[in-house]
Image 1: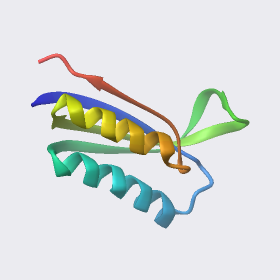
Image 2: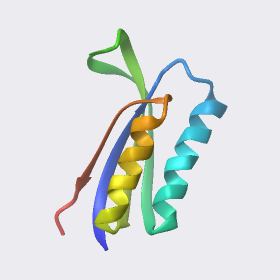
Image 3: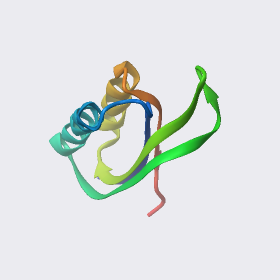
Image 4: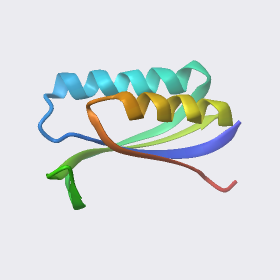
Length: 94
């Protein structure tokens, strides 16, 4: 398994319950075939540039271990989620 770090940016106007449900779906995907080591809730922050006229986002940083095949599934689920406006998963050097 390799170490990865993921950044998920959610829409700022979502209710806490809706955001938590969307984030839980991503966490369940990771935990199905990997192991989460740390989750950082950065809260609402200003975006560097507007995304579809949205100026703020709610940030989560996730550090985890997984197989490379799992990353494509996580990205697919992030892409189709209406709650997520941006995401990025990168491999951390060992």
